Length: 375
Image 1 (cartoon, rainbow, N blue to C red):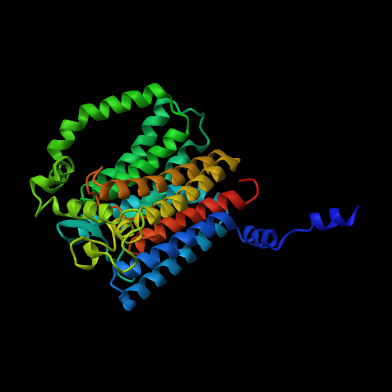
Image 2 (cartoon, helix red, strand yellow):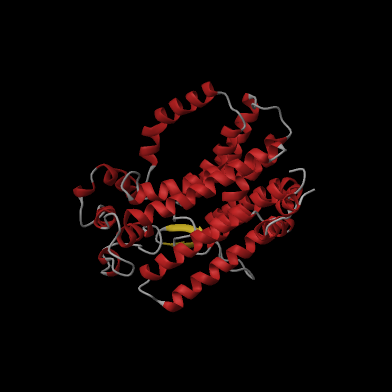
């Protein structure tokens, strides 16, 4: 063996660090990109908050808590997730029923639960993870593609929490949860003819859905097609967000220099509409940079799904990856005027802790399945 071969065979420092992270069940690439998104989001959020240090510090603490949840979730053996999935799902259904019975009402909706000895929380956030886990658990030991009976059971697992959340009402979260569960079904290899039948049935049911929508939900749909019909009312949000996006140009007006957000024209600039702040202050370059980071996360997560050796692992990781994509797509399409406004935050960028904790927990589950031997 020559000196050259000896040097070439030595592991690099980066490789050693990567192996150390893998030993504690963390994926180095995915973790690095998630941290980059969080850092980028904090910079933009600091501007959207008008440099409010106290609120910004609170968000930093929330993201640190979310990161802690990721690390803890990654340490658990995937068999634990498989074993406990149905029990967590049933517990989540019970909590959703309790929300309808005794939940806190805010702005005409019951979404929060305040139980003695526990912090106030949204049970619907639990279902973002427990629904895909429960569907994957059910399909794990069954022949794939699923039979019609197994498909109906899977749809029932998805439909019950989706319906309970929709009547809170919380249309945005119910769409995300339904999407997460349906992603598992799609990845299970369901026949295309059944998908076609489902699409036709959904289109046929659209009039019934419209008749059962609340007035403000109908208004959002109508605004999607013509925001100028009520420019000072229902169309205000989308008009201001698209104005902010267009005014940024290629390179943006500069950090802290956005007029739409800092002069209070742009609503919810630190939460649902924060991508408009990115576009206005950092321009097309800033938006593309953020989208590339999201794309790397999606690509890495899908690769991890292909590496899983068990059905449960493949279905869960793939579904959670596609759910992350839905988060990003729905938020940006909503702010850009391509979808109705449904209140979906931009992952790891929008202000708030509950959604970030749920999202990081899902990435922790992905890392657990990817790094534990045999999964």
